[in-house]
Image (cartoon, rainbow, N blue to C red; front, top):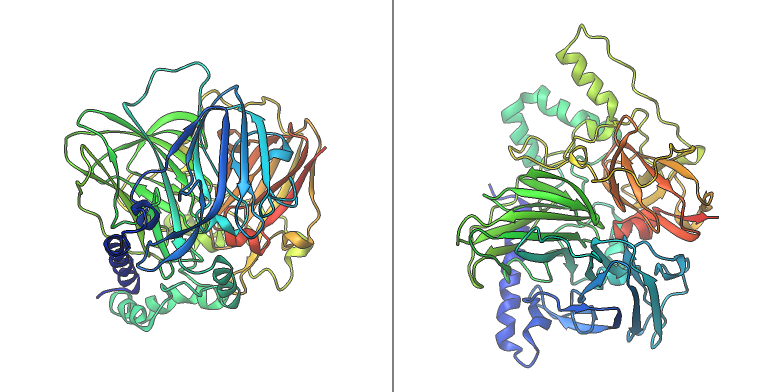
Length: 565
């Protein structure tokens, strides 16, 4: 039986072919403007001029307007060097205000690029000059801090070490994974406000019930639905926006266009994956090849070999693969909800292709994604009835969580970091988890945190209201960090959705469930009904923001101002 998700995926692939065919019809336009069939240009040095303007593009068989930088979508790759002071002049040729944020870079607050916080933004016709010293190395990116991020305003950054290091690979590519819609981003947001499941084509159907009846019997089928019916929740609510409107892109290329990285037998290839999806988590693998993860969010980690990893919006992962032969190998990045995929190819020459896997069948959210540690305890009690179970820590809910803007509270969140997440569990592949990450060199600050701030990620999913502690950004007071202090941030996810949380201006040093240093990141994924913690050294005076990097969640209110003083 063909599912609605399979029909969506097939339709998007055909639309990609149609966009490629459009090149022959609209031959008066450069091909790269139409189909994104080439890698972004690269700029290097200490001075950059970037011009933001509209650009016609065709990813689906129809012409739409993207937001380009120097005539490109994605924007040019910026190659900078540790220790250099860089000057970036950004000119806005749009008819409305825009802004550019340098994601993951440690810089002064007035250079951070958040309108209304760092600066007023860049008005039409104006040029803003960013100037800062590069204080780190690794893979980062830049993007609009407005809805222009959805229309293509994003690009890669590679910060090279000041002192050259031995090359770990013969080939080096940035791989930007993004989601494109022909709809106006504001219309996408308004659709979600009308109905939170507007783009969810994976809702349970009568056909699903009949299938469960045949496999599980009446009692099993009803039991499977009991918890979700009682809570009025949706068991397939892992993504807000799907391939119902999205086309998934790799370096600006559709699956049919097939971005290709050249690599020959025996060569090592460094792939710098950047999560540029505005509302999409990507699950990435190269069938038949092992991936050695060597960095996340620009920070080197102890190498770990996996088959697959999940890339959240805002995150970056560097992996190294070795080409075993002179055949083509598919880079496959399926969306978390399995409604579609981006794909590219590693091959010794352009034009080669390998088999493209079908997206995995989506599964329902599990009890652990709603009940947290209580579901884990119940499962253990069933398997080991004589064992005395330790009582998990109870969450502290703010008074503001008890209102119409919050439809779920998790009293006993789970704390494990070794869960790959929904639709990745028990898939037969070795999947990276946060428990596998170990940043080389340890924590930057050896002090124990002097205080804790607990924040709850909250929302009403059907109303598409998103908040922190039940308070949306427009109604919230700033969070205050004392200058120079070391503190611990505790995040408790009181929703069934996965949230990539990004703190501007300071590193987030992820802790294990026992409170020990795990990995240094700038964007941390918090799974449903999960509690995580990270340490922060408040060494960046000024006004910053902390927010969910799902663009429409941030727009709906899952954001706070952070003041360091």
